[in-house]
Image 1 (cartoon, one colour):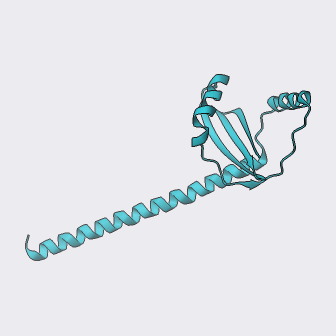
Image 2 (tube, rainbow, N blue to C red; image 1 turned 30 degrees about the horizontal axis):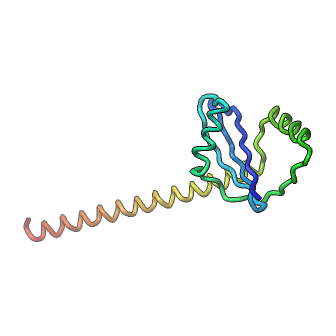
Image 3 (cartoon, rainbow, N blue to C red; image 1 turned 120 degrees about the vertical axis):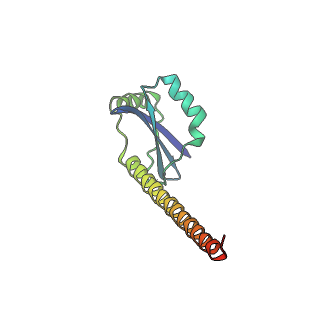
Length: 136
């Protein structure tokens, strides 16, 4: 069973959406910046078009509360949550894990690029030395 939740809130100076996904007792999150205040239909369109392309953070252990069967109770809970759109601490942990993973990946790619550039410079220097030795 997979549960998904989207929270849209204002984080100075942009509107931000946090997608939370609970699957197999693990919570993963993805943060999206909307810019100007999105209309309901714009958010819905974004979800339909771009949900598959979102990169979610690694999962964090989370307990799943069963939903009540009473629709009026669910409606009251939704209104209560709409009054205070605060992202959960678990989501913040998941987003932090995602930032750390992307930081490690960025460092790895940067290090590989530096090594490749240093090797290219070394090969170029060696080729120039050979050319000078041969009298070219």
